Length: 144
Image (cartoon, rainbow, N blue to C red; front, top):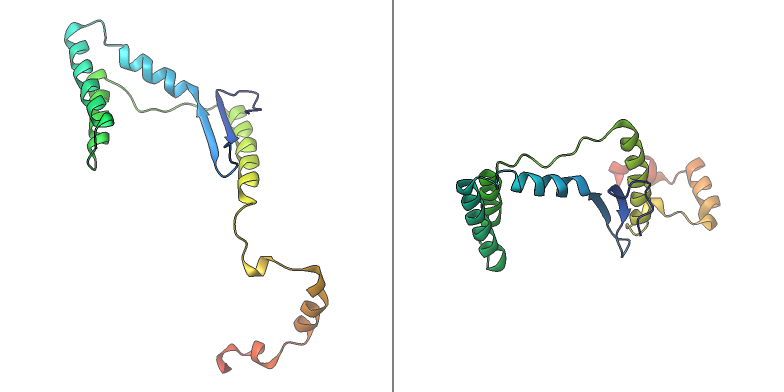
């Protein structure tokens, strides 16, 4: 569930809590608007429909490498679509950073830790002693 104050532009943790989810509804809206903006002209509409038919054939079939990207670009060219981007205001940047930080903390708890990061409290006295009194092979690593 998304607890953001602006769910249409937000970061959230995925259902399995192993990945993050970025939601940007404005990109979807802009994509549809740009797709149909030339729809009134019959010549443009036919070119867009042809490009969409080709894209559908690629999506429904077995696509070769680069074929999907080429079909998407053909639709974008036929419809005169711009790059999908959203301007994010200063306040939303701070809010998104806080949301992304929370997502990172929740998903990173499953990341493997290195042996140096795992320090059992029972080994504290040993670590202090070895720091004050290093073993001979620890002072000069070239001798080993």
